[in-house]
Structures are given as C-alpha cells and as structure tokens.
Length: 280
Image 1 (cartoon, rainbow, N blue to C red):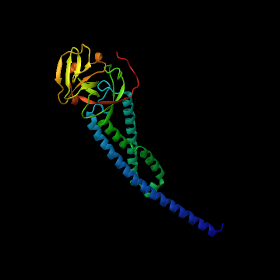
Image 2: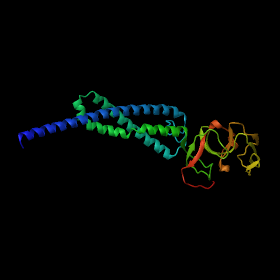
Image 3: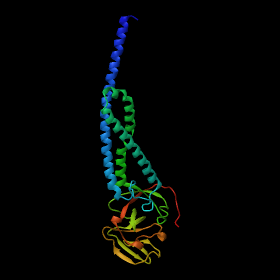
Image 4: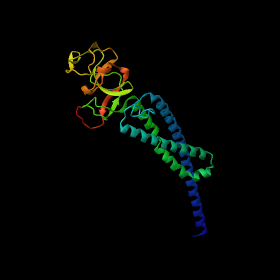
C-alpha cells in the first residue's frame, strides 16, 4: 500500500469515526428527551394514582384498601393475590424510574465526551424503565374499575345455598338503584351479607304465619322460627326487603327488617367458583 493510499484510508476512517460520533450524539440527545418526557409522565400519573388511592380508601371492597382484612370484608384469594403481586410490580417500577431519574440528572452534568462514552449503559437503563412505564396507566385503570364499577367478594356462610356456597368467590357491580330478584351484598352490624331482594320500593309486603307475600304473591308458604313479627306494609322509597335463598338458615329482613339503599353495596354479577352445595 502506497503512502497516498494509507493517507486516504486514514482520512476515511477518521470520517467514519466522526460520522459514528455524530450519530451517537444525535441518538443521545433524542434519548435524553425521551427520558425526560417519560420521567415526567410516569410521576404525574403516579401522583394521580396516589390521590385516587387515598380517595378510594372509603370503599371497603377496594383491593388496595389498607384496612381491609378477611374478617371485616370477606375477600377471595384471587383478589388478595392480585393486590400483592401488583404492589410488588409498583415497587419495582418506582425503583426503576427513580434510578432512571438519578442517571438522567447525573448525565446532564457530564461533559459531552463522557455522555457519549456511557451511552449504551444509559440506553439499557432507559429500556428497563420503559418496560415499567405502563404500570401507572394500568394501575389507574385498575383503581378506577375496581373503585367505581366492579370488585371481588367472597360468600361467608350458607344462607344463600344452593345458589351460592360458603367461600364462593364472586364479582360485584356497584349500581344505583336495585331491582326485585337482584342478589346483593349488604352491610349489617359491621358484617357483609349476601341476600336476594324480594321486595322493592312501592311493593306491598305481608309477612304472617303462613309465609311471605309480595304484591299478593306467595313467596314462602311455611312457618319459620325466623318469622318473628307480623308485617303488612308498602315498602317505602329507598328501602328493600331481602331474604336468603336458604330460608331456614338465613338471618335476613325477617330478623333485621328493611335495608336502606345506602346499606346495599352492589349486586352480584358473576360467580367465579364452580362448586355446588345442597341446602343444609
């Protein structure tokens, strides 16, 4: 190779190095901008999640309610498992974005040569954080759906056999206004019960030793020890008369009377469990 050829090759390599350096510099600028936007977006959405989390603590069936235990709100294992797994993912995503934020602001103070020198390392950090960037969006969706529309619950007891068995997992829907024959979750003396609505506002209700009548139709045709008092009334606005399907083993409106709509927490829309059970 002649000296002229060597010089041409040297110039070519220098030019290629310059082009590579220029390309890396442009990519670095783009990555820094993407990182900044992603960091701002992540923490803004995360703060919205925190505000919503605090607000939804009033919903006892909220899967992230810090005061919820099975003893005060019967909750199926699937709900507990989901909340624990999701909390772990949230913690990991927070760590990833805090680390990305630290690296971002540290790189801003570095000379250009050092930024380009560890560009690949920063790109890997960005890639890990990018995987978890969807977490606050998904969390926001889960909290909205669970806090305002649907939640999990678990049947505790045999009062709804054979429709529902003890420990059945169910999905409940939050609604405004209830209909006859809806199966509802209700609050009674700090307990959460599952019952069926048999009389709604405006219905004529009669309870006597021969049974329970709604609008003149016989609902029960036996005498039960739970029929403690005679009742003849028109259900007032905002109140409901509820019974358990397992009539002989259910404490319901025959014992504690009408239930106010504010004590009804939602209707059961889906049974997750597949077990069957005879009436005990």
